[in-house]
Length: 377
Image 1 (cartoon, rainbow, N blue to C red):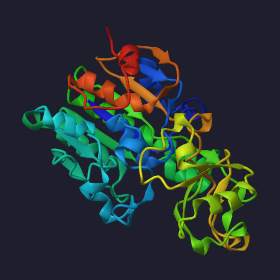
Image 2 (image 1 turned 120 degrees about the horizontal axis):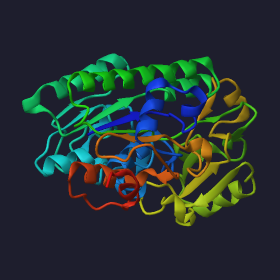
Image 3 (image 1 turned 90 degrees about the horizontal axis):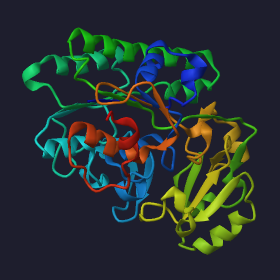
């Protein structure tokens, strides 16, 4: 089993760009109309949900960066401290596999650099943007080539087309090129599997963590124009923003921001919509702002923001928005052929992986709906 992630690959990129290899795999196997992310629709929360079957409020990775009031320090996905075991709850699929006597290798994946539940992947590589897609694929093929050490489960992660989407926008030629790059990488992987005569053995599940929505400098919410931000701790900002008043007076800050509620929704943590599953963790700050699609929240003032380079697109918005949807493809002997299923939440992928691998899943928030619709009878 190989689990492949194409970061930021929006569900409609298959139709929009018609990438050769991904399109063929989708037609040969099972594809979902859309893979619905968890809230917030950000990279680290969703990648860890996919491999644990837990909502972020339960696995603890509530954002790409956040504050833990018990640890009294910040988590940042791109700092060395993110590999500390204390941040990661739940049981990712590679831990499930290893605990049940299997081998599991990770070619990049959020969480795979940490020891979780006292277990690390059998082999893993720390993420580096300097590693080419070809090198990533060839590392995985190298693992598969050695029959006496061949892993039962492998993750493979590509950081595109997310980077191009942020930098250049969803309609840019750069994004189209990034889609081609990851499609070529997937093609190299499939060719390698066939060369190793493993096509009847290897099952592929290809996912993305979220989609992407266009931004504009004309659609910015500048909180520094509304209140003194030196008195507010900003845990994270962007499409979704988390705030903690430094004096502890949540009611006062809520009252100020509620009068300015335009193009965003302001929530107390305990009043977050139930469908977001974003209440039951102290890492979630007392006030959460969710921007309308295509709007961007910044703690700066309008004048400060004008001096900053602006992203062309981003994610983090309401997962039910079509623009936030990702891709799901399952291809291999274990799966049905030529089937398209309805949009499905990514919290159910973990149980599908466990079933396909013959593993007993750890406690999780998903159910068997993907198993029933994807696995061949």
